[in-house]
Image 1 (cartoon, rainbow, N blue to C red):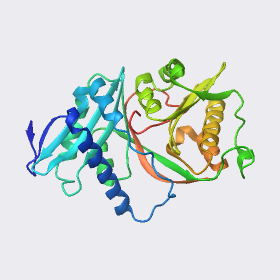
Image 2 (cartoon, rainbow, N blue to C red; image 1 turned 180 degrees about the horizontal axis):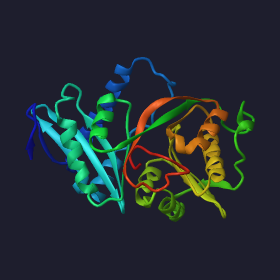
Image 3 (tube, helix red, strand yellow; image 1 turned 120 degrees about the horizontal axis):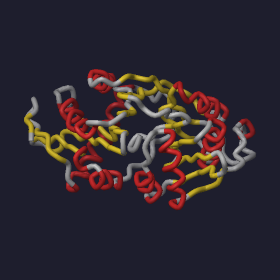
Image 4 (cartoon, one colour; image 1 turned 90 degrees about the vertical axis):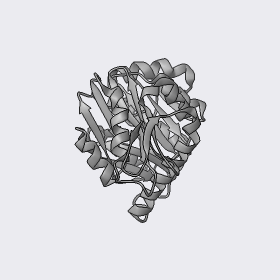
Length: 299
């Protein structure tokens, strides 16, 4: 364990830390939202938390899971995932009141230990300036993104639905389609993550797939798009349009970068509002990541 400025010590995360880590992360991001002021996009809520993600990463990536602890309890948490040649930061959060004291830096350094030898490292960041600066100092290039939220496009007949791309060739998917997601992810993001996506589906998530000659998929949680990947832009647009229709009301799509302009067209057609968001941070030589929309927990 290591001593930090405010008396905290860094140690590996355990299953006993799961509830505390979730509560700490929720409180830290809620505080960030309050400090930003009134919502800049919409009141479409973020997906409800699912604690299964913590147990999953502790099983798959124990060396990447760390907490900081002080006299008051957990002071911070970081989770680094490694999938083949791709490393990603699944979580970095520090307790309100002890931020900007070196805890985040120490936790990021521990999580990055599992990035050794990775061909590409990925982080989808919040818009907290302190976090963005920390990732830049760690050698990550910053790619601006937008978030999209609101709208009312749902089932056919709802105002604006006719402007969405044709969704022919798409269908609802399930756990039996994880082989498809792995094949697509290997091409688009450089590494499969079928077991990760399974945790989302098992926690109530939904899946849309296109399984013809042009393959692609999207995973949904509550009213948000969790992630999307496809082999071409036309398929990606059809899958995203079907996903928004499945949500059937106000929706949220996060981390839309310039490389995926096709998605901007779809969310605008659906009536969602675009606002600036935190950056995508990359290090090394990422796969094309196109057509591709990121998730927070599993990148």
